Image 1: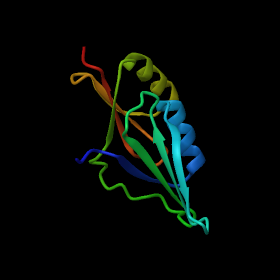
Image 2: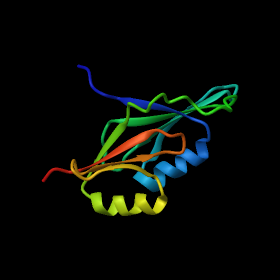
Image 3: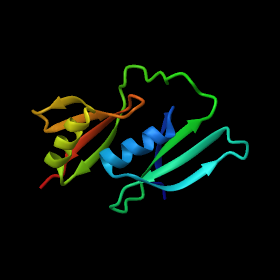
Length: 123
């Protein structure tokens, strides 16, 4: 057996990121791991739909510079049955960074500049 488990984003401000993911995508911590010396903390976020997939946020105590995300040619995607509701919420939050009406999708950015695709559920 092999199946997806989690995906990692390295972040600068753990509290800011946790607040963003809670507000924007309703993700909540499901487990954490902290180094004995406090040098790093891993927080795994899960959705309320019960999927096994998690987003790992990695915070490094001594990191002060933003991460170089290159050309952002990667992203995490979410499917939703509340597409229009989330779109309006994300517009109000000011985090929509790209829209593709022809494909029926849009992207938001998190506090560290990671792109997240929002896809409507197929009916």
